[in-house]
Length: 284
Length: 342
Image: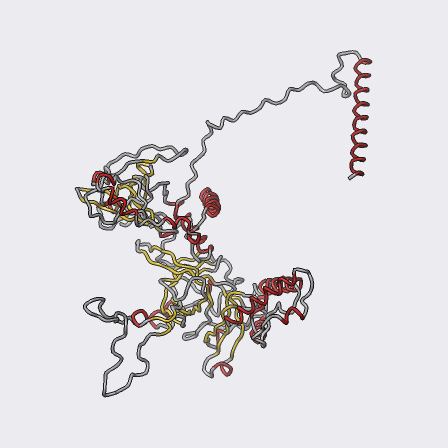
């Protein structure tokens, strides 16, 4: 340590000496030689101002929304990740042919499908997406609509070759991930105009959340939607249930479930890896 | 076996604690451990930690070299190849069950397939007619490399003679004399082609001790209407006073599953030659990541597709220009445009 400091001192001294030498030389030169003489190399360089700072206005840059379709994320199983990789390759090949857009539960979609029994051999269905299920190539989504006072639900497989096009007419999210309760809600909440025109939506920023609270038909319902297991935010329970019934439903709450460590499944690292892989493959 | 392993863990725990002082094990420390199985030893028992690591590394390198040597079987003086004749049986493969996925045909019908990956499949030994059973020759095939440290010496001798790393599953395939292959040859998924039919044998998932309703599909008894403690019981066990006995083979509760089951006549829809994956129709016995025995069908109605198969097996050198993915004629490949039914 002492040796280092010694050497350092010597170094600094030597630097100072050199600098002093240089300055002295310059002084001599500047007084002895009369101006102007800028062509000589021994002159000090001309003053160059520093380069102008480039100001990046972060509020004006457009950052595209990062979206990874939920069927790419593999479930927590004992399967070899290689099997998911093979499935992903097939999914990407199919996605290059059929454009499956970004959509969420609650968005309004229109699907054109090949049908041997339909006139013109294709049929078109417009509806609100109530559920996205399945992982990998077997991923499905269910569209619901009310046609001639009859509620109709169509379950489509995203990667089926019979599907010719999927368009998003209105992109929005809802307060829940699963809108199965629309079967027990008033029909106007499930009615979508089949001739609706697509609305434009931005590719950056947050997806609009529709905070609508749906009115329900009188009980009995298909499921007891008030129970905490379903965790539904988008129903107006106060119109159909008394406070005593709501309290009775809360008896079935299982508050220890959120602390269950065996059920923890952190997909953040996996999601990033898969997202970068899918992005690079799609851009090829 | 379980008790032995438990004792083993305890012993390892004590030994590791003592080794932290960076000294070799002293005989005094081993006196305190209880050793019940005195016949077998594990490879680390009398080695220091450095030697253990060295053993692991050298073994891994050796096996990598062995697999690299065997990648070109045709340059390695193969046995003389003969032509395929009517009635000849060729060798099968050992594969790993990966999982299941949906597929679609060109008419839009949806089927399910099981994906099987052929990992490190090698021919290990040839048993001639006399050695095997007097009727047909046989080839011993193994799949999926494992560590040599938990295999017995007799098994290791067999693998060493073939020049192949030790395998997890070793099976015997009955083979006609014109289809024998030199031991050490690697076998690939392209041995099978799309459109062929295969039989797959594997150990079914073990369910443990099960009652008669699950094991044999008995109807049981009603849940209500006065049944006293009898809802899932077998009921009667035979005719009555005339035989005055219970016949042998009577269906009763017992251990279910974990037996070899064969699924016959499964169609191969797709073969991935790059990763050695077979896409086989329907479901297959066994759990995920289990090892299966795959061979050509014995069903007479499905054997017509076996005309001109790769005989005796697929060699990369002579047929190396296969596409990465081989599809069956009816299968919809995802690179094609969406179907328009006319």
